[in-house]
Amino acid sequence: MGLPAMKCFWKAIFLLALASIAIHYTAIQSFTAKSSLLCTIPNPLTERVLDTPLAERACDEIPVVSNVSRKTHILILATTRSGSSFVGQIFNQHFDIFYLFEPLYHVQNALIYRETQAKGSIDHQNKRMVLSNHERHMMLGAGRDLLRSLYECDLHFLENYIKPKPMNHTTNRLFRRGASKALCSPSVCESLEPDDTPPEEVDCIKKCGTLNLTLAVESCKDHEHVAIKTVRVPEVSDLRPLVEDPRLNLKIIQLVRDPRGILASRSETFQDTYKLWRIWRATGRKPYNLDTNQLLTICKDYLNSVSTGLNRPSWLKGKYLLLRYEDMARNPIKKTEEIYNFLGISMDSSIVRWIENNTRADTTFDKHKYGTIRNSEATAKNWRQKLSFDIVEFIQNTCQEVLVQLGYKLVNSDQDLRNLSFSLVEEKTFSPFF
Ligand SMILES: *[C@@H]1O[C@H](CO)[C@@H](O)[C@H](O)[C@H]1NC(C)=O
Ligand SMILES: *[C@@H]1O[C@H](CO)[C@@H](O)[C@H](O)[C@H]1NC(C)=O
Ligand SMILES: *[C@@H]1O[C@H](CO)[C@@H](O)[C@H](O)[C@H]1NC(C)=O
Ligand SMILES: *[C@@H]1O[C@H](CO)[C@@H](O)[C@H](O)[C@H]1NC(C)=O
Ligand SMILES: *[C@@H]1O[C@H](CO)[C@@H](O)[C@H](O)[C@H]1NC(C)=O
Image (cartoon, rainbow, N blue to C red; front, side, top):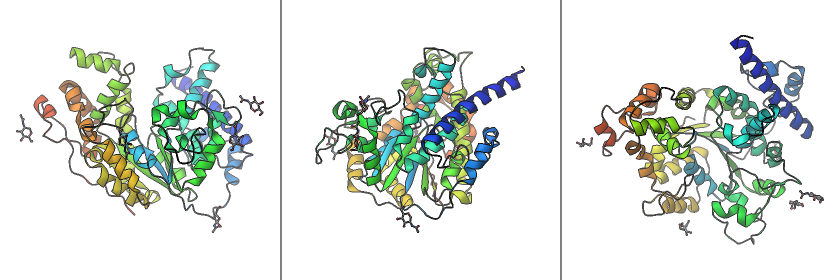
């Protein structure tokens, strides 16, 4: 087999894996034909799946839409280390929003689990949490199905992906359960009395024990809105089937951050994956085998997605808001108000209190690496002390187009890079369009 044929072969294997998961759960769901994997806008990567008779049947069976959701569903479309935990909190703190932190983690995990099991490898999972571009796209169909189910509060759907598989609809393996206030509050947290305040994220599992997903479903239904944060969807057009579904009333907040800041933050957080970047920083010499794929992916995804959003296609009318992390960090309350205006949801006072309490310099600085408790503005800028000018220049060359598009200024000298009174964030408003 030549290289292209080889690629095709692996693509087919992956699609089969996805399709069999899809069929598996479609059966569980008594074939409700809500599968967006099988019934989606044409995508060159999934066309093969679409061609099958099963897919045709699934598409035919989609019921005529006669009802429009009164709930607003919110998706925070982000990348890792772009401030998404912080932005997620402005929804998590709202008493009427059910917030989930990265449920698509489980889809990715399940695929890798299958793949490594198929190869008979015992060392599965964490070693391969970084997917290729290609695999990310493969994951999308299943990811969209999961999102749709979760917006409908069908958290049981997630059970198909959690490893080990939940027993009696309970699990203690839900990824970052503690990041979801609703999942740590009475009555989902069975050890709490109705008036108790929920524990901090880090104490949630210890305090609340096993998660009963049936209780989580009930809690979700008791909330007016559902918000989900994900870093596993490359670009906004990947969500088009969900955006166009009037039953969902989905609104997307695309959170972007200066790629130079993302890279600095990831190098600290994911020390293995970004090791060569750190070696470059430490030695002043660019390693010959530096892997620039992650950086290229950030910039390509941003460019595609933001271009789509800013072009104002009719399918995104009233449904897309572009948010720069730096603006949020500089003026969190004002930005939060803008976000809630866009969503048409009223803000509750606990959000302002939370922001005031969590963005000041004098509170516990950098409490833990995924935390949000820190001086938000200083954090947004601190990459300028952490990267060498060489690295910054390299990123600027690689990502120039998107930096300009998003209003991030390029620096021409080490002096400008370190001079924090010289802002690298142009004033720019990205108004939503209605
Ligand atoms: C829409 O669905 C809700 C809940 O399923 C139902 O109560 C309502 O009557 C429906 N509205 C229309 C116009 O069908
Ligand atoms: C699931 O429920 C059944 C029946 O109540 C019980 O026998 C079994 O031990 C439970 N399994 C687990 C893992 O809790
Ligand atoms: C989970 O909660 C539901 C609803 O209260 C209850 O019926 C079920 O027995 C609980 N499951 C377990 C395993 O405790
Ligand atoms: C503010 O933060 C402190 C320390 O983390 C915490 O004890 C307090 O409950 C918080 N107050 C509000 C209103 O969130
Ligand atoms: C830092 O930037 C400010 C604002 O652009 C400028 O006025 C100042 O001269 C700069 N300082 C240095 C040391 O370059």
